[in-house]
Picture 1 (cartoon, rainbow, N blue to C red):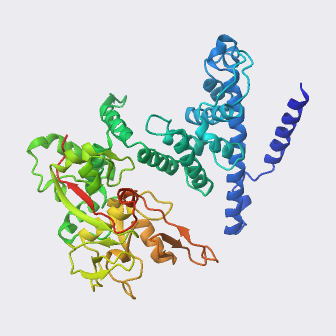
Picture 2: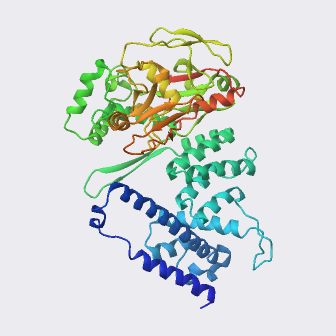
Picture 3: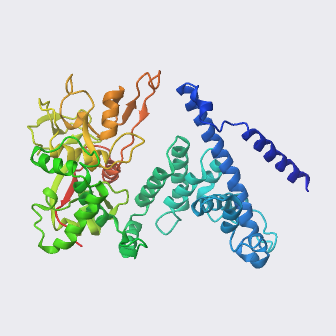
Amino acid sequence: MSSAGAVIIGRYRTALDTAATLPRDVHDLRGLDEAEVLEINRLHTDLARRVGSAGAVIAGDLAYRSRPELGGDGLARRTGHRTVEILLKTTTGATKEQVITAVRAGTLLTDIADDGTADPVTGEIREATHPWLRCVAAAVAAGKISTSASGSIASGLGSPNSAVTVAQLEVAAAQLVVAAVSGMDADRLFTTARALRDEMDVAGVKLREDEAHANRGITHYPLPSGGGKAIWTMDPENYALFVDAYDRMTSPKRGGVRFIDPSRAAHADRIRDDDRTHQQLAHDGFMHLLMAGADVDDSVMLGSGAPEVRITVTKDALRTGLGLARIDGQSTPVSIETAQRLLCEATITTIGFDSRGNYVGAGLDRTTVTRTDPDTGTATLFEPGTDSRLFTRRQRRILAVKFGGCMDPDCDRPPAWCEAHHILEWSKDGTTVIRNGILLCKYHHLLYHNGGYQIRVDDTGNYWKIPPTSINPDQTPIPMPFKTRNLQDLTAANPDGRVGRPFTAERIETPTR
């Protein structure tokens, strides 16, 4: 055994002995207060991340010793395993997904570490194949982000092409590393990375959209107990239609939005009182649609009309054909070509926002008043106060375009699952206007009311969650990022930063495919 090997093995044995002293009985924690348990959880997370980083280094080295060009001389094959992933699955007992994540992270670390070194076989100087992920590899090696986070960043950003440079990807990767270190989870990292890529590579949006549409389909297979199971793969446009129909069939049963249109209250009560589960309701509802087919009366289907899709796109993008559009509740954008096609059968609503994200424009359910913007000198129409407690349907649509879903930082519920919350309480000094509204899902709406959480908006239009003193004695503000990039799209279309050109929000009344 080499001296270096003896040192590393010794460190692992010491770490293993230390890990054996960690509590494994839940009753060991029962006598601790909440602050102590939360601190233990934080330390365990940090420990797991560092152990995962070390595991990635091992996986990367095993992958290097098993690289394809070595053929049968590679470590994996010499030990009876077809690939390094199978070797790791066999020796660690991990899942296929966990092993793939570790190998990808380890391969990235190896790729960056070997940049500029000579290949021992060919003598050629190696060049990193993913240089734009250098900061990601450094963060993984330092134990600052998890291997899952690195995989999400790499997958979401993709590779450079004729439209996206290495330098652009380096900047985006650095931003995502900061977000990961700040606590953004791997799923949201992927969504954010993909959104950044879409904004850099608008042409690629159409390609990915075409690919998703080409991959659509239904597969099914019989079950041994009788009957069968089907798997339905949909592109974003059709999935949005599906989700809208699914929510209408089941949301009252699932404890969805509590503020129900009085005209639909009886329908909601019937769903809530039905003895079927929400999965059974969805099954029976879609089977009914399948059987009814083209003969269904869309004025009464599901009690509220045909499924609908809301698409948001800037007027400039529609006019020039440059840019992208977004489907309400979907993280993946669609191309301008798709927006223009769907526009043929759409009800169009124009919505305007200024440089701070404030709603501007007429056409609300209630009377508007004129106010002059001190920065631009432009007179615009704003909402006055109102004595009504409930936000109107149109106001909720404007909030959906602005916020894109539940604004709690840790929630991903789409607008259809959300309720309009008064930032300043209506019962005190708040008003039912767009500038005093924000979207929260039912869970977080109740939590904010009952838990003492507050929301603040700064002068630049950013939103902040203020926890109660029982959670955070200092009440440190927590950023509440928008769940849609609509306002960023508007800023990009209007780079002077002044009063924004309006969005055009298309409400699609009928499916087009």
